[in-house]
Amino acid sequence: MQRSKWSRKIGSTATMSKKTKRSAGRRGMRTLMRQRRSGIKNELYGTMVRFARACGAYDEFMRLPPLEHAFLKKLQFMSVRIRAEKESGIGNQIVAAVKKDLSNYLRSQKIDLDGSDEEFTMYDLITAGQTLWQAARCNTEEPKWKDVLGRLGPLIRHFEDREEFLHGKIIFDFLQGIIDIVSRLDKYFIWFTMGMEYVGRNFATVYTIHRQSCIRKKVAVDGRPRPAYRVGRALWVDGVKWAAVKGELLVPFCKADPGREYPVFVQSHALERLKERLFPVPVDDILFDISFGLPEISRGPAEKLFFSVRRANCKLGYLLTDLIGDELIVRSFLFITNTGTDEGRKYNERLRVETYSKKYFGLDSLLTYISTDICVDPFFRSVLTDCGCEGLVRFKEFFSEIESDNTFSANLRRELALEEEVGKSDETSALKPSFH
Image (cartoon, rainbow, N blue to C red):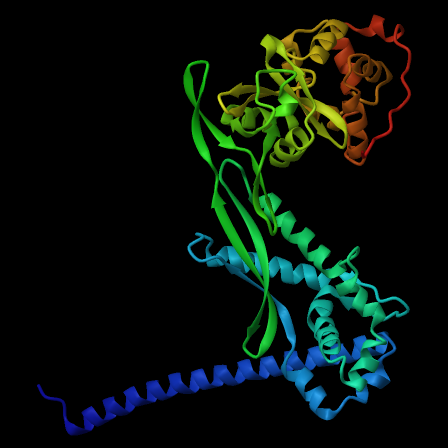
């Protein structure tokens, strides 16, 4: 049945009405966005005035021609932007999360200007503060701008002092923290690069997130293929830096070419042992920085290579490593009290325990030493020091605020029938932590 002329007209009118509503909605949204941008620009300009006043440059700043003030309201350094490298596989949710975290961080970090009680945040500094500094720095041929620049010393040091580089260092440290949390050598690495862009009539600092998958391969260990991952660390601008050990450092311990570097791979088994025995300490940076940056190498059982694992200059164990072909393969991690170490064997003798007993009482993992009173108890502290495990005693100092089980040592002495040994050991003075 055909629709009447009137019904067709009514339907057409309804359709047009919907289109009109959508169009009006879009116009309204654009108007709101313009108003929001205008509000942000006015707010940043007001912060620029506060910076000028805090630096003692208010009078010089206000004497600038009206066109210069209009320019500063239009062309400003806006907040930082985050984006993912094309085809990196990093989704919008990750980008949004990083942007939100960084924005909250910048707004929470306070900065000081010498000689002023005015409060500013890092967000203020990298937007309004940077706009004022850049404008003054780029217009030194104009006498009035030169007068402004001459007063901006307290602000300039945040951008031009090579030793402090305050605003950059704070942001870099924050982004490196994200990199260290997210990157895993058995999954993938992320890092950031920085650039300055002119976006929407405003300058913006743009941080691009990059991603690189781990390098995984099969290595033959004891005649069997096993998965291993190349050891590396992502640095915020430089990308992934791969761990390698100079051959000249290996020559005293194995047959190596002193003129080359040997890349480092770690078996999945070794990663599991590291995470299990060193919890709650993160392990990826230990593999890269502590063990292979300035390695302390020795010979372990069956002439295996031992790379000492240290944290805050406290020895916590060893990486049992083989040189297979042209690569160093980390096969396992031995906590310092494990039976396979010299310290562990001495520990066994002093406490009259075997491997099973140590595992049962948790004496082969870091968590026991930082969450109980075993490193504080005079008898066990003396035993640990005599056996070469004084690093555990020092490391405990960094966790003094953690609530400890103060009954552990007494119960352990009773379980191991060590009461008669207590009086034979001289009390060892507390060891202070070292940061070198």
